[in-house]
Image 1 (cartoon, rainbow, N blue to C red):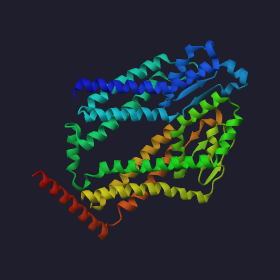
Image 2 (image 1 turned 180 degrees about the horizontal axis):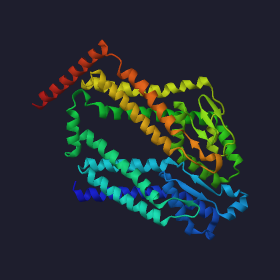
Image 3 (image 1 turned 180 degrees about the vertical axis):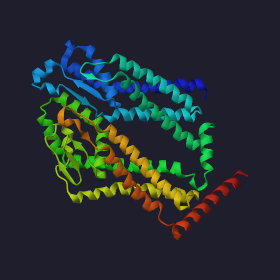
Image 4 (image 1 turned 135 degrees about the horizontal axis):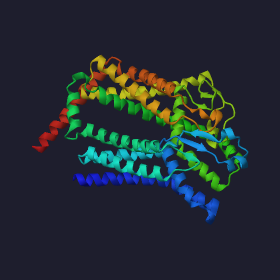
Amino acid sequence: MQRVTVVLLAALDAAIAAAVGLAIVLAPLTLLWVLAFGASAEWGALWPISGTLWQFGHGVPLKVVLPDALLSSLAIPKEAATFALSVPPLVILAFTALFAARSGRRAAVAGTWLTGVLSGAVTFSLITTLVALTSQAEVLQAPVWVAIVVPAGVYIAGALIGALVYAWGEGDGGIIDHLHDIVDGWGDWAPVPAESLRGAGIALVALSGVSAIGIAVMTVLRGGEVIALFEAAHVDVLGAGMLTLAHLAYLPTLLVWAASWIAGPGFALGAGTAVSPAGTELGVVPGIPVLGLVPEHGSMWMLVVVLIPIACGALAGWMVRSRLVWEGTGDRYLPRVAIAVGIAALSAGVAALAALLASGSIGPGRLSEVGPPVGGFALAIGLEVLVGCAILLLAPRHHDELAEERTDRWRAEMAEWDGHSSAG
């Protein structure tokens, strides 16, 4: 594919990613604007709020400044007129990152991944700059440079990951192949980087799946509390629909909270509160319907759930070990130790990033501390995954495994020989 074509397609991908993300925010707000205010709506305020919420969905922290008229009508104290809002709905961030990864991979397939990533990065950065300069709202405020850098950083990171993963596996005829050749020259240590990344990916995907199952189970068990909070909010059909959409947007954030609960550290719903398997200490909780899923009680017996991240690590260790056996590499003990440590470290790093994005402030006062502890979550995930993958990776190779390896290799060689014979 010609380089100009790759540049244009990558730029188009970036424009589509930005446009779809903005539409996800703008469409329901437009409907709300029409139904709530009718023809007399002040349309000039719609775009600034939509653009700011799009930035917020990418992780940009906001400063909320409530006007005096609203403070008077709702009898809100003046000390609560200004507060930070820094727990974003991660569904928009996830969409942008996945779309960027797809674009980066497509550029890598075309053989010009660096050009494609640069084109997409420049295009998305220009769009974020335009949005930041034209969507400055009075109620929701964000530093302009943060509103430009953070969304652009999400897209660039996604595009680079998508491109580099494909280029490492399939080759790019350039710098990645040169780096691959250097790593291949490490001998028994050559599988360490790739298998560490692969194992961390397996462990994190497994933990995400378990967290989703946990949320589904709590929805069944505590659905009545959620319905009661919906009723207590006294909203009409439009309000209930908007609340439901907001809950769906926060689903990835809730997955991080659930994973932190499963790992042991739990999460907070305000200063001085804790929700963990060992116990639940809550004060006054905001009447947000989805918070009805939070378990009211904990027990030391619930700490058995920490075996789940260990099992996720064991699954990663088993799959990495199977690949090493198949390829006939990683026989030495120290490289396997390095892989286990690499899987744990990468898992802990991703957990720290996820906790950083899923924690912060959702209101004034005690609501300024919400979400999982970054350090505690990362440490727990790292140690639990390390235990699980070490059990499978470092166990001695038994006779059945060696026999299975020889059988698999013989079958592969015979299949290759048959293929050459048929071709001849």
